[in-house]
Length: 429
Image 1 (cartoon, one colour):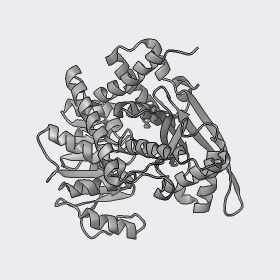
Image 2 (cartoon, rainbow, N blue to C red):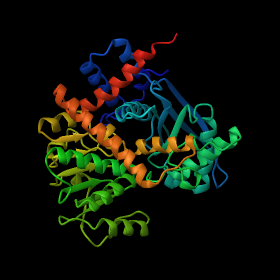
Image 3 (cartoon, rainbow, N blue to C red):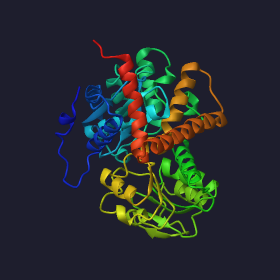
Image 4 (tube, rainbow, N blue to C red):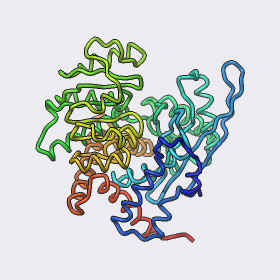
């Protein structure tokens, strides 16, 4: 067991906003609202297991490098651990621990029988060849072989990973146990038990939650002006689906910057352009260049931060002009910024709700894999939409009943369900 104080020993730069500290703050706020027993809070504040492994890998040039891989398992009170594997230079134990905790609340909020986990390796996957990435992934999987499994912990893709890495993980695990185990990971290719609808799932969930939030305000998606920071898997899927529903996507961006068109971008054409230009959107003939910072403060109806955490802070919160912010990324709005936005009446759709479409369809993929019965995309999307819409309206009801902001309402529901299950199960021994 690793305590909050142990995780706090990693000392970042003063400007850095620690995602683990922020996650703990949200937990404490929910516990205060729910008047949780101090013992329950103490248990929920700690990850159940933290695993750090060495990953020796031989590079294509013959050099041997040793990487560090993490897997944090926060809680399995409601079911097996579930969470992504992240390959990114900024991966730290504290970040992974925060994301594992958030995944616990997210799964509980959506009513799916999982606990939270997260894993990662601090590498830039663009700097490694495909064969090097395969060796890294397979060795990482083999080091975690006793800590994952379809009834124990089910990894999924995250930033820097994809269906390709999940296929390598499934194969490595299956070879080690002696038979094919499609339920060990989700987000796999369709050819080996993946689910239809998984690739667009997180973006589709964002679209659904934005649609429901607008409907609560008596509006529809038609003609709504939307700015999206991030044009990766989640951001581009959300852009495409919102565009199909009649929304006007006025700006999108990647890590290097973005493009802006007040009349709305042609999203299908932009996606085709990016696919033909190594995912770059620069040079797209429609629109003008814009920085990521300026995109966040554009006059628009809906702002979707779909990139990294800590993008909207107390420094720029009062410059945000959107009336709805949908957190497609994990933790893009800091605690201080959230308070400023709430005071101005801005609706912030929290990450554990807005970006939950991915884990919902991962759950549906897991169910299909365990039963060896696979569904068409229409059914997957229908099942996912039902769970997302149900969760949204539960959050709205909680917010109105308790007279609290949406984020606190979402966390109160998620934390409360885990706390209740923990109380019912009791403490062993």
